[in-house]
Image (cartoon, rainbow, N blue to C red; front, side, top):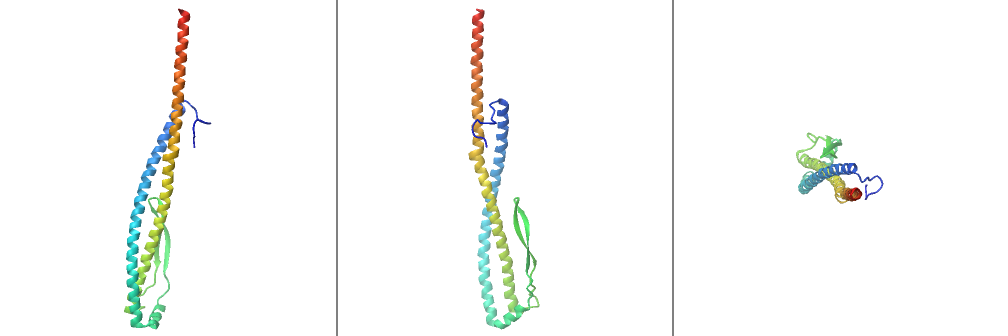
Length: 208
């Protein structure tokens, strides 16, 4: 990263032109990163609001499911509940797949297989089991959203660091060097003008 006029910095017009093109390219990248940062921030805000709403609904559903489970135990008894539960196959499977959100890979949870409770449970136990089965699916959606938020927040932090580095360090340093080269070229031009004028004055005097 350039700092001042040091090694590799040439106070010439050609080098100055190269630097200006480079700064223009960096500034364009800076503007694109700013847009990405703003989009990530908006996406993160929307996901956080969605997560808050999902958690509220999830808590309500948990409360309702446990009330119905307590009712099922009261009506059928614990032995009957356990007996019917043992008839259900324990074959719940999920698959974690990659999904792209704004170019960021986030996990997508896909239910591959879940236990069938039809014709395995009585109507009372089946109703309670269906509620808990739905809860598991809701819980997976919450976990998926939390993972997405974590990935987006991480990418937002990295993007913000890049934006700050370009804005506060890289671009100002390049502009400082450009200003130094311009000042040096102006000084050289002034010296050359004075030297030329002085030489012309001597030649004119000799001719006179």
